[in-house]
Amino acid sequence: MVARILILLGVLLAVSFTIGLAFDQSALQDFCVADQTSSVLVNGLACKDPKLAQANDFIFSGLHIAGNTSNVFGSKVTPVIVGQLAGLNTLGISIARIDYQPWGINPPHMHPRATEIQVVFEGDLEVGFVTSNPENRLITKVLQKGDVFVFPIGLMHYQRNVGSINVVAIAALSSQNPGVITIGNAVFGSTPEITSDILMKAFQVDKNVVDYIKSKF
Image 1 (cartoon, rainbow, N blue to C red):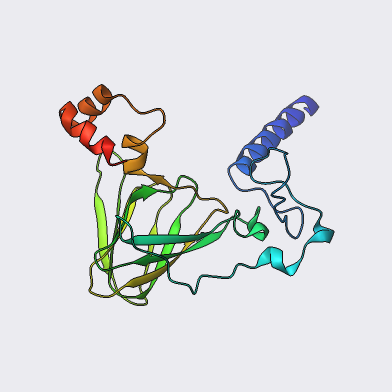
Image 2: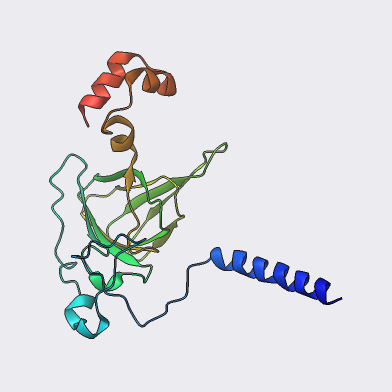
């Protein structure tokens, strides 16, 4: 009987441990201001001594400044992730301002570590994301001032200004370092490059087309 109870307890402990691993760990302290100078490699950034934390560790100034959209895409992302705001370390959140000139785009990309929620403050913004295989269904909407849209974690998405005035949007993300994989850069601009024969077969085009696209990245 005792042996059975011990076995049952062991199973319950194992199950509890497994379930616990499926969620973020609970914070063990008030905060963990990132020590940008530390050489310690952890999943995130090492903490500096909390007694040395100052108000400046928890503030970022500049999101009121419009981004420079004079580029090929006509958009500019101003991120506030742990690299810009050390106090975000271990808190699982970040924010960004995105500016779009008329018909500017934020090209198809994905965030491997975060869900994104975006609110439009000015203008009309077309947004969309594509569901995973095999459906690959495009879910899209034109947002107006005050509208909010969510992009699920890991799914490819984009935004495009479809109006005649500049669009300003703010995005919040569920990671201190959400990461960005821009599809064109990843496929056609990797280092070292993906060989042309692979891309020819993947996209069902000839080498001239692949080489031309590669030259853009």
